Structures are given as C-alpha cells and as structure tokens.
Length: 401
Image (cartoon, rainbow, N blue to C red; front, side, top):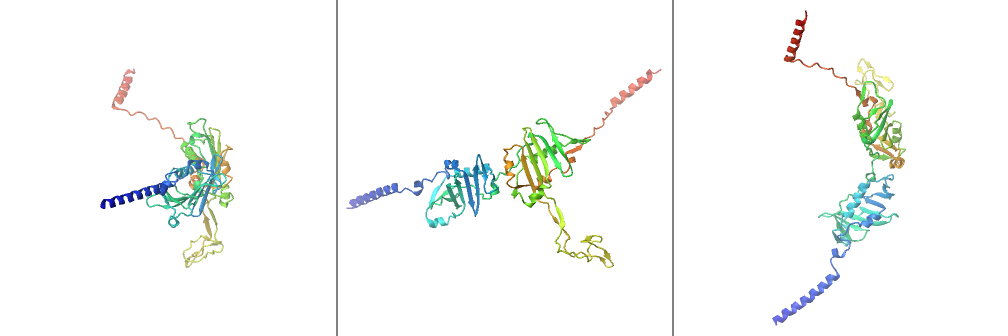
C-alpha cells in the first residue's frame, strides 16, 4: 500500500511538472518576451532618418533641425549647431542597450519620475520617429524610461546629459584661421593711422609697410594678434538693435586679415566706453560741514573755508560712472559661401572683454628700437703678448741710426 501511494504521488508530480512546462512555454518571463530588451535604445535606421532632434526638460525645450548638409539650432536664432556635440549625444543614446523590462504597473510607474524629460527624433514633417521619456536613476545604475508614452517601463544605461540651454548647442566659432595661413594683416587705431604687415611666403617673417625710423618689428606681437583673432568664439548674443550693440559700432576697431589662399576676413571689435554722467538730479549735495575739501566744486559752488574750518559735503553725488559696455564683434568673409556672412544678419555677438583690451593700443606697440651695435673690444693682453710687444719695440729702437 505504501508503494502504491508513493507511485501515485510521483505520477501526480510528473503531471503537474508537465503542465507547468507547457504554461511556461506559452508565457515566458517578461524580459524574454519583450522584443526591446537587449536591443539598442534607438535603432540605427531611426537615427539615419532623423531630420530633427527635440530635447525637453524642466519646462525648457531646444529644437535642432537638419538644413542641407548641416544642422541649425531653431530655438537660438537658427544659428549653426555644434555638430560634434549633437553627434556624440545621439551616438550615446544609440549605443545604449535596454537592460531589462521593469514594470507596467501604473502605481509603480508613478514613483519612477517619468515626467517631462524627453528626447525625440523627428522626421522631415516633425512627426516623432521615436520619443523617449526618461525618469530617475536606478539604485544599481541606469535610468528608467518609456517609449512614446507607452505604459511600459524599461531600464537602460543612459549617461547622456539632456542639455536644454539652446545657446549651448550653437557652434560658437566665428573665425577659423592660423597665423601660418596669413599673408597680410592690418589693424586700425582710434587716434592714429592703421598699421599693415605683409609677407610673400609662408614661413617668412612679417615686414611693416611703414617702418618707423630707428625701429624694428616685434613679430611676436603680430603673431599674438593673429592668434587671438584666428579662433574667435562668441560668449553670448543679443538683438541687432540692442542699444549696447548699436553703441559699440561707433567705437569699432578693424582688423583685416588676408590669407595665402586669397580669402579676406574683416573683423570689427568694439564697445561703448566708460561714461561719467550727471547723477540723479534730485540728489542735491550740501555745501557745509567740516570734511569737504577746500577748493573742490560741488555742483556750481566752490567749497571754501571759513573761521570754523572747511565745509562738509553731506548730499548725494553730482556725477555717476557708467562702466564700459560688453565687447561686440562683427565678421565678414570675402568667401560668399562662408556661413559667418549669413549669421551676422541674425543677431549681435558678444566676445570676451580680453579680446578687445588685449589689442595693441597704439602703433608703436608693434615696434621696438633697433639695438645699437656693441663696440668692438680689444683682446686682453697676456704676459706673453706684452713681452712680444716690448721686444718688437726694442728691435725697432736698435735699428734706428
């Protein structure tokens, strides 16, 4: 009886095992069943079809679009995009593979912060080819995400930063040439004639078209000038009619660079200078008190001393100083196909103050006095040369009648 019972139990277990095996084949684990698991986050054919990229995070959006063979930042004056940055970003997403399916439970999804951080690749008609919503980081690494607002969450090793600052996606380069390429360069001055430097071949030294008497060219100063102008990058932009941009044009200094390839680039740099203007007319300085400087002028009144001592100024200032404005630049290329000609019509460009303040302030900064030749020194006499000289003198004296 006991043996029969054992055989009966074994038979039942075998049947249950068979049923379980069949059910598992019909309902495999979610990771094995979901076709996205272990696949790239973005398929290569989707990347190739993309005509626009839209990034959204914390209420800010940046849109980049393909224009011919290049890309532009639509949300930033349609300026050329930094293609290398865009390519790295998309490639990082394309290289990431989905680790696993996480959940489709709405209550669990609520805790994964899948809100407004999104990356979308669009076609030429601005329809999404794929849109990925990215949530919080997982404790073990990676980030939670879902596709096209589907109620299914996955985990993938996403490291790309969702940068939604439009300016950061623009190619900030305005000029691109090296000193070795330059055949001629000129620079203007506020109160003097321009200086011009030329050379006939690459590798030769520059010469000044007009060299001051007794001076020679400091070629290192010319090379430094070309170094600062050859890789200009803007730091910010504003509207073309911005008052500071308009005011800067009246104080432009111009550098004109011609290359051996026959291209000429004209660079204008300037800013509104510091100003001292009248202070608030309601600020009325007093002309009494012991701490005023005798002889100074307050308004139209001259401070004078009396028997009790100098007067003291106790009111507000008569003038105020407005600091110099930001440095603006314009660039014009003789090459009609150079993109810089088109973008100069879109907005005004700011550059670092040091670019402007580092320009030579006067023509003489390019020159230095020609060093005077050192006087020839007589060789020092040794004991032997002194004795030989005395011997020759003695021989000459003996030879005389």
